[in-house]
Image 1 (cartoon, one colour):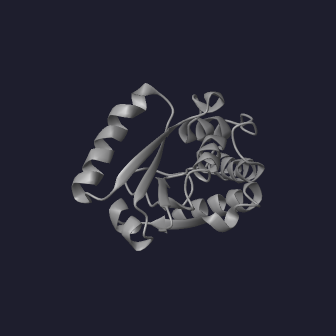
Image 2 (image 1 turned 90 degrees about the horizontal axis):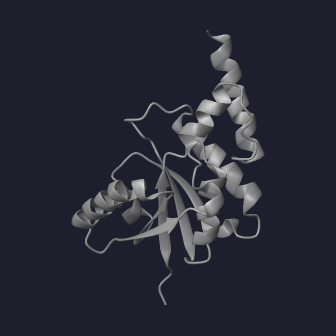
Length: 171
């Protein structure tokens, strides 16, 4: 029997509890999960690619202690399908918070499938308690001095606080 491998791409700037929830649920569906941290050239990210990879690895290490051997965290700066080929993944995993996410995700899934016909996309809807949660909101709240500890792992709270100090001291 072939091992089922899914690829969960995102910028993870930063990884939130909503992302971790999608990972936890995906682990029940797939033998292995590749968490692909995208370079996101077109986005003005708060954390560098290297920092985001390290933060995702830390969250995986501390959150999924029993299942961490099933998770691989990688950075990628190529087309998604190229990274998926490299890691032998046949399924793209995408999380959706709201109906408003669907149109974009549907177009993206269709484009990926046009580029790689054997590719499948699986959508997992966000758990109800995370429908409102986005990395962008978390960043904005943290940089303005708000408490984001209920939205992210403690390691992320710490990293965001450090970024906020650096940004506020440079003003």
